Length: 238
Image (tube, rainbow, N blue to C red; front, side):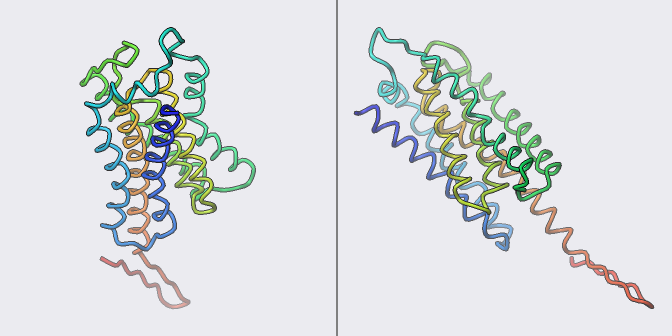
């Protein structure tokens, strides 16, 4: 029962922090500062929480470990994380091909996805080798969780593209991402701090790319052109 309660608390903590972004997807008219704050809010909460609990990692991990003598790295949980981390991305492309278009054209969303992936890797990989933290099962390069970062990057991508159409797309994406983080702990591959920081970095990478796109899009809207039979008018708002 303790194991189940703690797993549920972890799910709720990550999902609630990530879900706070939903308001951003339905309010595009917010000032630039507020959009920046919203883009940074959930990642900041998750990363800060992960750093604060690092000293409690071992005691928290006891709730996720199997009884002595049982297999500590169940193949099912590892396979679940391996595939589910990309599931929200598959959903976006699957729905697009089925005619349910996302917020942006497929070429543009693909470009932003690739930028998000590059940014996430640029943050996660150096941290892994710089901290060189041991995994719960004795492996190396534990901090932060790359699987969890990828899963939350994908969930945020789904949220940005389809969250406006239905909140359930966002809920589904972040639930799958949370399952990935939980599975990484169940399989004894990551500490709780690894999962929380990985989740924050995954969300942050996608948020920053989409935030930059919104700003560029807004700037383009400041150029106004009108033409008539005898005149041509161009104005740019500075």
